[in-house]
Length: 218
Image (cartoon, rainbow, N blue to C red; front, side, top):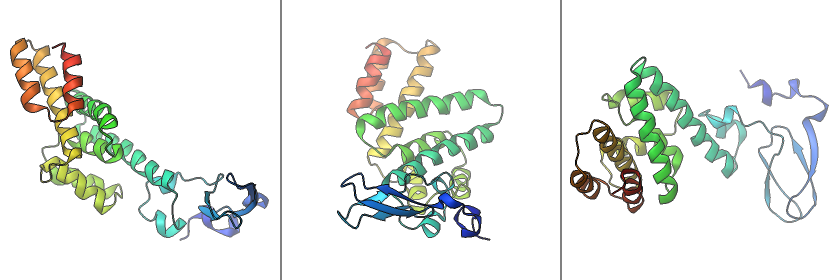
């Protein structure tokens, strides 16, 4: 069955329209299912401003259905995927609100550190939401069921297992370390010297160390 949104039988009078090229002003004619069009005057590729990319943001068959996807959509796919991973994480932990809260803390610190370190946040946040899973097979299964690409699944699993010690891994490591140190501080189990030692020994990125020092006032 073809997606109704892409089937011409369901199209209306405004399904074919014209816009001005944002680069040169030349008119470009779009069909509603064109993801992008190349301007015949300047040669720039222009995204369809009226296209609803909602389903394409997570559908594993988006490329086959819509053709070459614009870069901004590829970014939104990973962004939407991490939101759906967060939902699945909450379902997995059910009423274990302590686990859910812990995972959300890791994701919050991962996002803050990741932005400064320039890592792909979609990938890192997927890993952050799954970082507390004891069953990594289940974590992988969730990504597969959500239609994540194989490259993303492999990278997330490498982060979680520590098979690759790259910048993505370091961001998740630091987010987890900061969360764990914070938990111990809240239990009044660490002296200031112990906190300093843990920050120096456990946290790998300069951004992570800086954030920890500010957060823990050391």
